[in-house]
Image 1 (cartoon, rainbow, N blue to C red):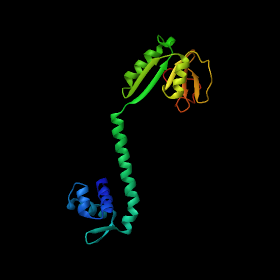
Image 2 (cartoon, rainbow, N blue to C red; image 1 turned 60 degrees about the vertical axis):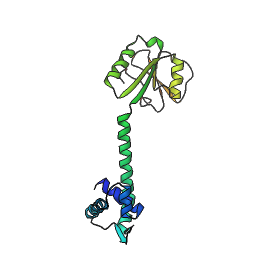
Image 3 (cartoon, rainbow, N blue to C red; image 1 turned 90 degrees about the vertical axis):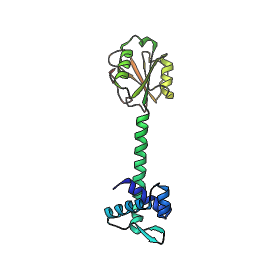
Image 4 (cartoon, rainbow, N blue to C red; image 1 turned 180 degrees about the horizontal axis):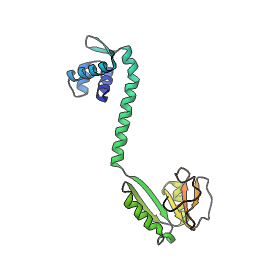
Length: 186
């Protein structure tokens, strides 16, 4: 079943006139007739009844209508997602405290950027309390801090990283939220 045939079916149902349908689809009446004939042959049913130049759905056409709409809607959503996936990069904002600048974390982020070109990674330094607030407000996806003092928030989780004094701060919707410890590679 071709989606172009389904779209011709839906257009004819909408306009009720094959000439107007052909104009709106920028094609010929003959092409619309072929698409409908192919669809009716494949389904082995008649989809329309014709009264002069006016087309109306048969009982089989009425049964097909919601499925045809759903098929074209899914195709449109898929096409949109595909185009958006090609034209946009994923973004990851990683904050870390000033004291971690010489730490291996900086090299890890650099290597992550090289290995994951599809992810636009933005790494920056700030104070632990500022980074924690930025995770809470969504300005930062994950923050690496040494100092875990301060207010606790049920929407945030501070996760120890390996056996170091390094902690990752993540928001409750982050995939790492349920971890009790992390390795730097995670």
